Image (cartoon, rainbow, N blue to C red; front, side, top):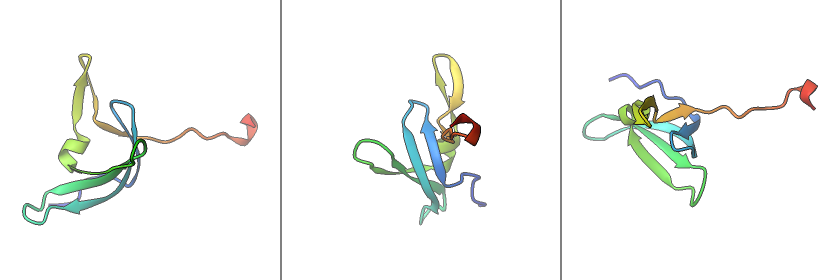
Length: 81
């Protein structure tokens, strides 16, 4: 089973919190791909979630959106300083 297209980096959960994805791993028995990630708030807990679930859409207020979306912080350009 090929690795899913989930890259390390920052992701925003649909509820608004930020997480750092560190790597992908495979379950030792099922070979299912898992995402290893860390909360960037509170106790900075570590989590593992099946890649299929990490990548799926959820319904919020009648609209579909990604459970986790890649997040790129806005940076200032030289002309904005």
